[in-house]
Length: 123
Image (cartoon, rainbow, N blue to C red; front, side, top):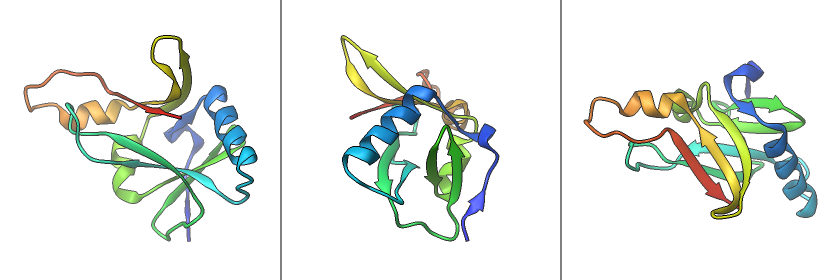
């Protein structure tokens, strides 16, 4: 059974929630959620991925905020706890989702590298 988690664990901005709802509505994907996961390493050792998904696992954590459902696998929660998911529209870099996670930075410290703690995923 999916685990319910406090909404404060991962924050979804209203702009991100609206963008997710728009995508789900345009594609007529009823019953889908946004799956957020660790997708390998980067300069800080952590890159995040996102996908629309309706195949939920018993060990998944589900979070509902601002009218959308997020699903996170157990291993990724360690890095996503305390994260904020936003949707940005930057004239220079385009538009897309951005994840800012303080735990991505904490998990990677100690390797001598300095870099930011966010991930951008274009739409």
